Image (cartoon, rainbow, N blue to C red; front, side):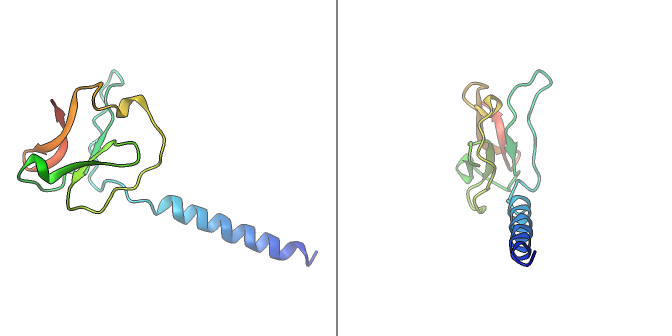
Length: 105
């Protein structure tokens, strides 16, 4: 029994760490889910303050986030979903009404 106790403790620590890491990911703070009713584009925007299109960049592991160029990199999970394809949905990351967000090209 004493041999399994350290393993159980380590497993509990590993589980706690994995929960912390998965919950500790940075995500857009003011996300703007652009998914349409028909299942179209589903990128997100941080709505960072901007004055020109060059103030905004595409981020996230799957290039699904429109964020401010001066914001820290947005960390997202790394799965690909077709609704992230900005080209397919004719979307571009840019400055719209002084906020970085996806817009129609």
